Length: 234
Image 1: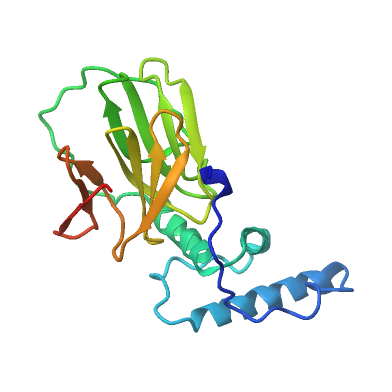
Image 2: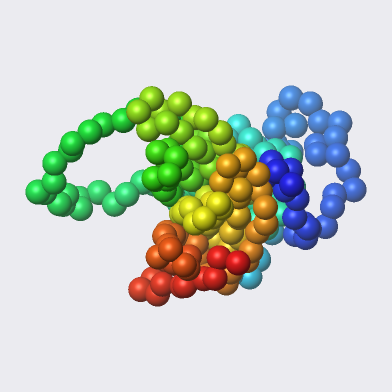
C-alpha cells in the first residue's frame, strides 16, 4: 500500500464529547467556549503518564494558533502519535544551540539547489542511479515527512512519497533494491521499493530513531546515545 494510504489502529485518549464544539454559541461567547475547551484539553493531556518533554508554552493570546492546532489534531485523529509528532515539531522548531563554535579547515567545492521547505533529516547518494535520496521531517513548518529522489544538479524531484503528518521522519539509507526510513519517537521504520518508491512494509523498534547507514549487510541505526543498533534488513 502507498505511504499516503497507511493507516494504523488508533487508541482514543479522551472520552468523546456528547455535544458539538461550542454548539449554539456566537460572538465572544463562542471564543470563550473555544478557550475553555482548549484549556480543558490541555489539562487532560498533562495528566497522561510520561508525557513528551515540555516545550515553551503558547502565549494565551494566541487564540487562532491554539485553535488551529486543535482543529488539525481533530482532523488527523488526535491519537497519541499525532500529539507526539506535534510536540516533536515544536522542539525541532527551536533550532540548533547558539554559540557553538564552527569547525574550520574545510572547503566548499560545490553547491547545489535544494527545496527550502524540506527539513532534511537523512541523505543517501545512490551511486548506481547517480541520484540523491532525501528523507525529511516536520509537520506544520515544512512540507512534512517525505522520502524523495531528485537530480542533484537541478534539484528537480523525480519521485517521492508523503507520510501522514503524525510521523517525524529521520535517517534514511538504501540497501539493494530497497530504501529504509526511520521515524523519531513514533518508533516505526518504513521500507520502500527503490525504483517505484512504493511502501513495502514497516517495522517497529523500542528506541528513538535518529541516523541510519549500512555496511552493505546490516542496517546501522543510531538512537541519540552512544549505542549503535545493527539490524537485519530482512
